[in-house]
Image 1 (cartoon, rainbow, N blue to C red):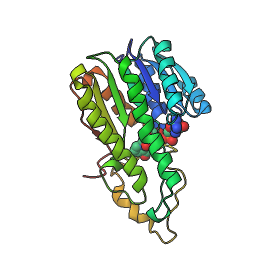
Image 2 (image 1 turned 135 degrees about the horizontal axis):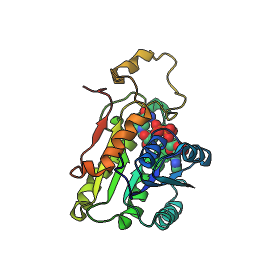
Image 3 (image 1 turned 90 degrees about the vertical axis):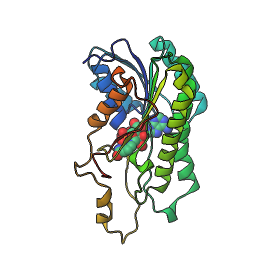
Length: 248
Ligand SMILES: NC(=O)c1ccc[n+]([C@@H]2O[C@H](COP(=O)([O-])OP(=O)(O)OC[C@H]3O[C@@H](n4cnc5c(N)ncnc54)[C@H](O)[C@@H]3O)[C@@H](O)[C@H]2O)c1
């Protein structure tokens, strides 16, 4: 498939996991991808793995830093010759019992997951072409379904979901689409070490597991690519929940 031939994509979080898999998928389908991440090493690995009719350029930036985002979007539009698609994947996670939540943790979660996503949308929207532009924002199934020890993370992803649905309504008159994609559990380095009560029975987590097991990042990249493609041309303001049936 070459669904992204001549399509210019700005993608955050491309240095690992779902963002890397999405970059590789889009390049393989012909896209010109401008890949952003906090990790230069991660971006270099992504660029080295990319192959296909498309191409990839990279830039290190912190999505939570307003001036860095302004400069990154300007540079992306100049390098690509415009922007057709924005994909916000960059995100962080904390697994913490509510009793141990800190203001610093909550502020960083919201700065990266919510403010970072919002800033990229704000800065990219003027570049997106009417009747063709697309934004895909990665939220999480945690936005709508309870997950123990993920209160602040879930709140930040709920904010990403709500932001995306209202933005879809705000820009629909231009024919610009906004699609939130909410994965369930995905095999990536995201979650990191858990800080859980010592007496916690790990089986407590079983209820949020998919009968299909955790997804590979490539499976979520496929969903993001669909949402960004013209195959999804009538899809906007509607969440795609890709959680392997965790909540059926
Ligand atoms: N892995 C899961 O189970 C899962 C489930 C639902 C949603 N998600 C969401 O998917 C997205 C990608 O997660 P992943 O699982 O691929 O994790 P990951 O840790 O493999 O990748 C996240 C990437 O974002 C980058 N990043 C983090 N903070 C950044 C910042 N301030 N500026 C720029 N880049 C930054 C990291 O360097 C990393 O390359 C996140 O938004 C996450 O919340 C993941």
